[in-house]
Image (tube, rainbow, N blue to C red; front, side):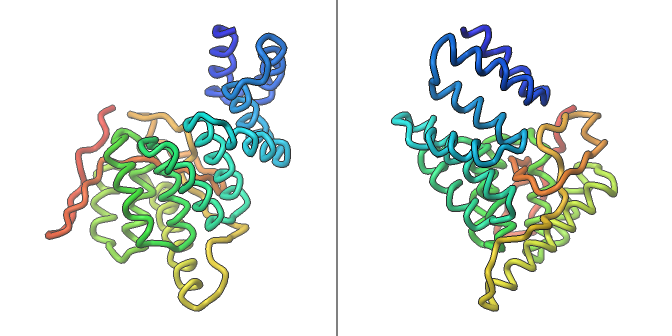
Length: 248
């Protein structure tokens, strides 16, 4: 069963979500619907657009007695909310996931990104910096952190991050678009309008893009929760400087 589970995990890493669902059925026949299998199914259902079934699976998983399993379910619920453009609700689910798994860089990074797109700029800072230090090799976070800097009127520091990454115009446009949405959401919140919901969320760097030399070719998709960690280091008493560029 462990070998079969690793096969399913490999399929999902390669984006073979529909095929993985068939093998998840086999896993359930072999060992029942364990939390691990339930998480694999919930992820596959989300990635294949079966939102209602995915939400039901994540909700069931969120009630698991094990904190890590519950965090996975809450994380998934946050991703679903973010995919629907409700970043305030996404941040609520992701904060609950963070409480159950306080050192999970993926959860923390997604929490920061959700808060950013909800216009909660001040609240986004800490999870972004935590994710940056927990998993410094992830390129996606560099770009989303640059978006946060830009949205927070720290354009010079954002430019330093982008220059260190040596990214092209596609990633710069994604950063600018994300920052613009964050500023718009923050302004709407100040004006008393509903915040954190946008059916046309900006394009940002696609989750799972390769690192190293291949990372210069940025692929774009719509409305992910893609924030991860960064090598950028905050310096509060003097102009912030970016950390070293990721090693290929």
